[in-house]
Image 1 (tube, rainbow, N blue to C red):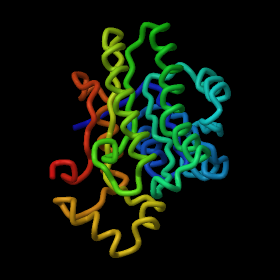
Image 2 (image 1 turned 45 degrees about the vertical axis):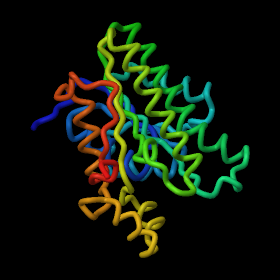
Image 3 (image 1 turned 90 degrees about the horizontal axis):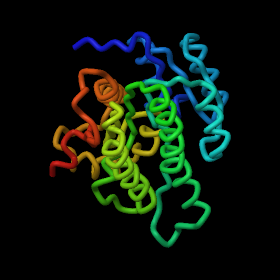
Image 4 (image 1 turned 120 degrees about the horizontal axis):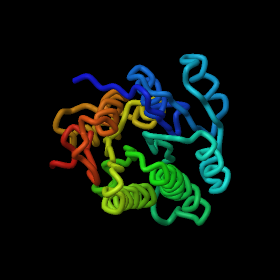
Length: 244
């Protein structure tokens, strides 16, 4: 199935590494003009060196006004991937206000802010658009010591469904991709403990974690016209974890 984004501009948050980096590079291969946002200038410089065609902008997505200014400055945007996210893991008794704001600011507030800014421009231009939010299997399944993380991803799923309902009339689609553990550099580090790794693998019917390309392929499909009748959906990329 051939997918082309020729003539489209795509914005990817958290594009300096991991899944976001993979998405940004693949979008360029599919003909899109890509704008990559990340908090780390160093990571963006590395991405730029790998693919000079990608426009990079460093921004702290926790800053509402700065983020809105940056997104407006790179508009018009036709395709959006809200990929940026942080994971704070630990028991409930270790939750602090600082941890709460840190994870909700990136995983929820930034998604709402960037989406709002992009959609405002799409509506103003009377232009169709496609948005994909990177959620998680943790939006649906309770994972031990993931209270904050699960809460943020559940919020992303709910937000996605409401936006799909409200802006379908404008031909703007929005969906989620909900991966299991993904083998990014960070994922390999976090899940390197054999006991912890095996406990999760035992819950995945196909007995492996996701690779970055597994998520990238799902994102590109949902962004594309091949999925033009799909909106408000949360697509598990989890090897069957949520089916059990």
